[in-house]
Image 1 (spheres, rainbow, N blue to C red):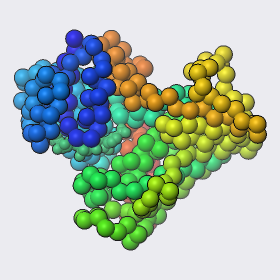
Image 2: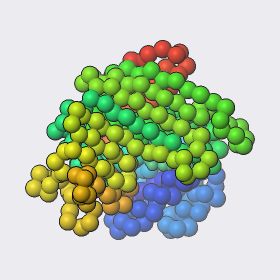
Image 3: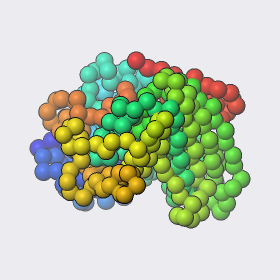
Image 4: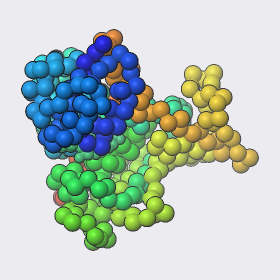
Length: 347
Ligand SMILES: NC(=O)c1ccc[n+]([C@@H]2O[C@H](COP(=O)([O-])OP(=O)(O)OC[C@H]3O[C@@H](n4cnc5c(N)ncnc54)[C@H](O)[C@@H]3O)[C@@H](O)[C@H]2O)c1
C-alpha cells in the first residue's frame, strides 16, 4: 500500500481525492492545507492525518508520492523540498506563474530523475487519440480555439497577479492540447480588453484576450479566451484543426467532430470502441464522444507510474508542462508589451 500526501485541499484537491479513494493500492495518509478545517475534512474521509505545514506532514507521514493542488502563486518551495526528499509529484497546472522558477524546478526534477505528472487531464480523454491521428495524417494550416466562460467563484482567480489570468489559469488546457496535437508555437501576439465584467469584488483581470500564434510548422492559430459570459448560453469551448480538405473540432473532454476525413478505425490502433462512443451522420460528419474517464485515468496513470517506477505512460510530465506554461506566459508578455513575443523554447 503506497502512502499519498495531498497538499491543497480545495476544489481540485478534493476532485483528486475522489479518485484516490477508489484505488485500493494507495492510502491518503496525510492532507495539508493552510486552512486547517480543509485538511481535517480530507483526513476525516481517508483516516489519514491533517497538517497545515507540508514539511511536518512529510516528516510524519513519509509519503511515497504527493498531489500538489495549490493555487498558481504557491508553487516553488513545495516542489523543491519534494525533490530534495525524492517524493514523486503530481502537480496541478499552471505549474507556476514565473518561468524561471518553473525552469529551476524542472532542472531539479530532471537531475533527481523524479517521476512527475501535471494535471493536464484532457490529454487522457479517449477523444485525444482520434485528434492526434488527424493531426498526424493531415497537414494543419489553421488552429482556431475559443474558450468563453464566466468568472469562477474562487477569490484568487479574479486577480491576474495571483491566477495568471484566464489564459494561463484555465485556457492553458487548450494551449496544452494545441501543442500536443499541432506542435510547438513559435511566437504570439495578444490583445486584451476589460470593462465588460461587472459585479465581482476585487476583480482585476482581463475579460477577453485574443492571441494570434505562429507555429514551427508554418501554420497559424488563434486563441480567444474570455470570462465575460454571464450565462451558459454565451459559453463556448472548441479547438478547430483545419486542413485544405478536412476539419476536426475538438471539444475538450466532450467530443470531437471530424468533417471530410476518413474516420479512425479500431484496426488503426485507436481506442474507438463499438460501445456507442462513435457515431456517423448522413453528411459524412463523424462524432466521437468522451467517455468521462479522463480525470481518473490521468490520476491512475501517475499512481501506477510511481508503483512501477516507469513514468513512460505519463502524458504530461513536468518538463512538457513547462512548454505549455511558456506558451501562456509569452501571450501575457505580449499583452503587456503590445509586441509579438517569441515563445521560450525548451528541448
Ligand atoms: N486540472 C484541472 O482541470 C483543474 C481544475 C481546477 C483547478 N485546477 C488548478 O488547481 C489549482 C488549485 O485550484 P482550486 O480550484 O483547487 O483552488 P482552491 O482555492 O479551491 O484550493 C486551493 C487550496 O490550497 C490551499 N493552499 C494554498 N496555499 C497552500 C500552501 N502553501 N500549502 C497548503 N495549502 C495551500 C488553500 O487554502 C486552498 O484550500 C489551481 O492552480 C487551478 O488552476 C486544475
